[in-house]
Length: 173
Image (tube, rainbow, N blue to C red):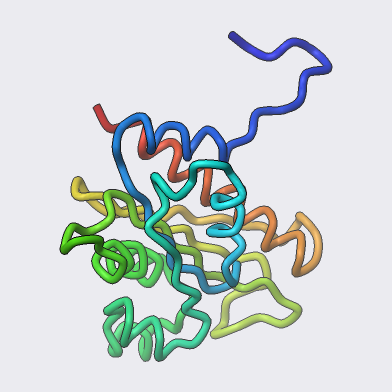
Protein backbone atom coordinates (compact mmCIF):
# COMPACT_ATOMS: atom_id res chain seq x y z
CA UNK A 1 0.00 0.00 0.00
CA UNK A 2 1.39 3.40 -0.94
CA UNK A 3 1.70 5.97 1.81
CA UNK A 4 -1.09 8.52 1.96
CA UNK A 5 -0.38 12.11 1.00
CA UNK A 6 1.31 13.84 3.90
CA UNK A 7 2.74 10.62 5.35
CA UNK A 8 6.45 10.55 6.09
CA UNK A 9 8.48 9.14 3.21
CA UNK A 10 9.74 5.59 3.49
CA UNK A 11 13.02 5.03 5.30
CA UNK A 12 15.20 3.03 2.89
CA UNK A 13 17.76 2.15 5.59
CA UNK A 14 15.02 0.76 7.84
CA UNK A 15 13.57 -1.15 4.90
CA UNK A 16 16.99 -2.59 4.07
CA UNK A 17 17.66 -3.69 7.65
CA UNK A 18 14.16 -5.23 7.86
CA UNK A 19 14.63 -7.15 4.59
CA UNK A 20 18.08 -8.40 5.56
CA UNK A 21 16.89 -9.47 9.00
CA UNK A 22 13.76 -11.17 7.67
CA UNK A 23 15.88 -13.17 5.22
CA UNK A 24 18.66 -13.93 7.71
CA UNK A 25 21.23 -12.06 5.61
CA UNK A 26 24.22 -9.93 6.62
CA UNK A 27 25.73 -6.92 4.85
CA UNK A 28 29.26 -5.50 4.91
CA UNK A 29 30.21 -2.06 3.59
CA UNK A 30 33.40 -0.62 2.07
CA UNK A 31 33.34 3.16 1.76
CA UNK A 32 35.64 5.65 0.13
CA UNK A 33 33.97 8.98 -0.67
CA UNK A 34 31.19 8.42 1.90
CA UNK A 35 33.69 7.90 4.73
CA UNK A 36 31.45 5.71 6.89
CA UNK A 37 28.15 7.49 6.24
CA UNK A 38 26.48 4.43 4.65
CA UNK A 39 27.34 2.26 7.64
CA UNK A 40 26.24 5.02 10.03
CA UNK A 41 22.91 5.36 8.22
CA UNK A 42 22.23 1.64 8.53
CA UNK A 43 23.37 1.32 12.15
CA UNK A 44 21.09 4.12 13.34
CA UNK A 45 18.25 1.61 12.85
CA UNK A 46 17.40 -0.37 16.02
CA UNK A 47 18.23 -4.04 15.49
CA UNK A 48 20.83 -3.33 12.80
CA UNK A 49 23.30 -5.58 14.63
CA UNK A 50 21.29 -8.55 13.35
CA UNK A 51 22.11 -7.61 9.76
CA UNK A 52 25.22 -5.40 9.62
CA UNK A 53 28.57 -7.17 9.87
CA UNK A 54 30.46 -3.87 9.79
CA UNK A 55 32.11 -1.31 7.58
CA UNK A 56 35.56 -0.40 6.34
CA UNK A 57 36.47 3.16 5.42
CA UNK A 58 38.94 2.56 2.60
CA UNK A 59 39.72 6.18 1.82
CA UNK A 60 43.37 5.48 1.06
CA UNK A 61 44.12 3.53 -2.12
CA UNK A 62 46.49 1.29 -0.18
CA UNK A 63 43.62 0.15 2.05
CA UNK A 64 41.57 -0.71 -1.01
CA UNK A 65 44.45 -2.89 -2.13
CA UNK A 66 45.60 -4.47 1.15
CA UNK A 67 42.32 -4.93 3.02
CA UNK A 68 39.81 -5.32 0.19
CA UNK A 69 41.95 -7.05 -2.42
CA UNK A 70 41.57 -4.48 -5.19
CA UNK A 71 44.42 -5.31 -7.60
CA UNK A 72 47.32 -2.85 -7.60
CA UNK A 73 47.48 -2.93 -11.41
CA UNK A 74 43.80 -1.92 -11.65
CA UNK A 75 44.34 0.98 -9.25
CA UNK A 76 47.48 2.05 -11.14
CA UNK A 77 45.77 1.90 -14.53
CA UNK A 78 42.35 3.34 -13.69
CA UNK A 79 42.68 5.11 -10.36
CA UNK A 80 40.37 4.59 -7.40
CA UNK A 81 37.30 6.03 -9.12
CA UNK A 82 36.27 3.30 -11.55
CA UNK A 83 33.36 0.82 -11.78
CA UNK A 84 35.66 -2.21 -11.54
CA UNK A 85 37.18 -0.77 -8.36
CA UNK A 86 33.65 -0.47 -6.88
CA UNK A 87 32.91 -4.09 -7.84
CA UNK A 88 36.19 -5.34 -6.34
CA UNK A 89 35.63 -3.33 -3.15
CA UNK A 90 32.11 -4.79 -2.74
CA UNK A 91 33.34 -8.31 -3.32
CA UNK A 92 36.38 -7.82 -1.09
CA UNK A 93 34.44 -6.47 1.88
CA UNK A 94 32.21 -9.57 1.89
CA UNK A 95 35.31 -11.64 2.66
CA UNK A 96 37.13 -9.08 4.81
CA UNK A 97 34.20 -8.87 7.23
CA UNK A 98 33.35 -12.58 7.29
CA UNK A 99 31.81 -13.80 10.54
CA UNK A 100 32.81 -17.31 11.64
CA UNK A 101 34.49 -17.73 8.24
CA UNK A 102 31.20 -17.01 6.46
CA UNK A 103 31.41 -14.06 4.05
CA UNK A 104 28.73 -11.41 4.34
CA UNK A 105 25.77 -12.15 2.09
CA UNK A 106 25.87 -8.66 0.59
CA UNK A 107 28.87 -6.45 -0.02
CA UNK A 108 28.25 -2.76 -0.68
CA UNK A 109 30.89 -0.23 -1.76
CA UNK A 110 31.17 3.43 -2.69
CA UNK A 111 33.88 5.23 -4.62
CA UNK A 112 33.76 8.53 -6.44
CA UNK A 113 34.62 12.20 -6.58
CA UNK A 114 32.82 14.44 -4.08
CA UNK A 115 34.91 17.47 -4.96
CA UNK A 116 35.74 20.21 -4.93
CA UNK A 117 38.25 19.18 -7.63
CA UNK A 118 38.27 16.42 -10.27
CA UNK A 119 40.29 13.28 -9.45
CA UNK A 120 42.19 10.97 -11.81
CA UNK A 121 40.48 12.61 -14.79
CA UNK A 122 37.01 12.02 -13.32
CA UNK A 123 34.61 14.93 -12.90
CA UNK A 124 33.17 15.97 -9.56
CA UNK A 125 29.96 13.99 -9.01
CA UNK A 126 31.20 10.83 -10.74
CA UNK A 127 30.27 8.01 -8.37
CA UNK A 128 30.27 4.22 -8.54
CA UNK A 129 28.35 1.96 -6.17
CA UNK A 130 29.34 -1.70 -6.08
CA UNK A 131 27.00 -4.44 -4.90
CA UNK A 132 28.18 -8.02 -4.49
CA UNK A 133 26.45 -11.25 -3.51
CA UNK A 134 27.28 -14.89 -4.10
CA UNK A 135 25.26 -14.54 -7.33
CA UNK A 136 27.55 -11.88 -8.80
CA UNK A 137 28.83 -8.36 -8.58
CA UNK A 138 27.66 -5.18 -10.28
CA UNK A 139 28.60 -1.52 -10.37
CA UNK A 140 26.09 1.28 -10.69
CA UNK A 141 27.27 4.50 -12.31
CA UNK A 142 25.93 7.77 -10.92
CA UNK A 143 26.37 11.31 -12.19
CA UNK A 144 25.69 13.47 -9.16
CA UNK A 145 27.29 16.68 -10.43
CA UNK A 146 23.98 18.52 -10.34
CA UNK A 147 22.98 17.71 -6.76
CA UNK A 148 25.15 20.35 -5.10
CA UNK A 149 28.48 20.46 -3.31
CA UNK A 150 30.57 17.86 -1.55
CA UNK A 151 28.12 17.14 1.28
CA UNK A 152 25.17 16.84 -1.12
CA UNK A 153 27.09 14.41 -3.35
CA UNK A 154 28.01 12.28 -0.35
CA UNK A 155 24.41 12.29 0.96
CA UNK A 156 23.03 11.35 -2.47
CA UNK A 157 25.57 8.53 -2.67
CA UNK A 158 24.45 7.16 0.70
CA UNK A 159 20.85 7.07 -0.48
CA UNK A 160 21.77 5.50 -3.84
CA UNK A 161 23.92 2.84 -2.17
CA UNK A 162 21.20 1.84 0.27
CA UNK A 163 18.63 1.78 -2.55
CA UNK A 164 20.96 -0.42 -4.63
CA UNK A 165 21.49 -2.87 -1.77
CA UNK A 166 17.76 -3.00 -1.05
CA UNK A 167 16.98 -3.70 -4.72
CA UNK A 168 19.59 -6.49 -4.82
CA UNK A 169 18.26 -8.10 -1.63
CA UNK A 170 14.70 -7.98 -2.94
CA UNK A 171 15.83 -9.67 -6.20
CA UNK A 172 16.97 -12.71 -4.23
CA UNK A 173 14.35 -15.40 -3.88
